[in-house]
Image (cartoon, rainbow, N blue to C red; front, top):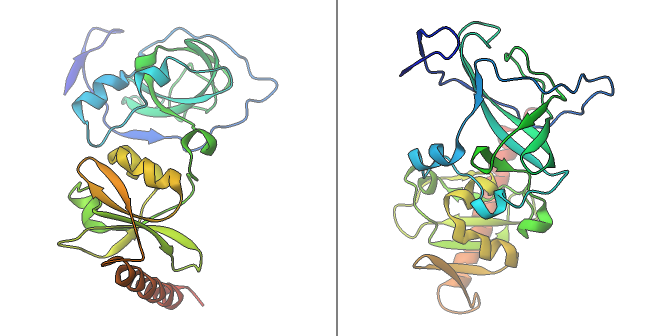
Length: 254
């Protein structure tokens, strides 16, 4: 795809390569703290991106994006053309911004390639530009650093888990298992926030922090894990955890 450049009036390809900054950076005391005028760079409309890719590009609710507080960290997508790109091509960078007040923040990443924009600069934005919020565990109600064990077909086929169970994992502690009843595949680990973005109903069992849960339409209901099929399932998961542990030990470097 191409677009007419606002700087030179010529037609340029739209950038599709993305650099995503993972962690915010500390702003040095001598940062210039400028408010640069955009020159061939702009903020992407996150709502439009979500509408275009509803099952792969997730954003916080509008209500939450309108309720940002000073000190919170948000992520914005900076898109830019060849005139702002140090490599003269055009690129996309997703960077953290610390909210100062409504619609205004401080850039908490040093751009890789955007010319004229620096770590610590001031940036204006609107709710539609916010593509991510650095939520606290307390706000979400569960630990975000956990990596549940997930049936690979859940991810490949975009299928909500049929069963969610808190059970022993390969490292000896309890973990979440997310399973399918039919056409199951090999277990893989996945980021917990990625899973809740794709399947928001998972939030309820995650916040409970324990138990065995069965999908019931669009939600999950907790079952009595001491009756019916559930004791045998938990025994199976204990065996699977031991097999995964042994496999991890074999794959570990000497």
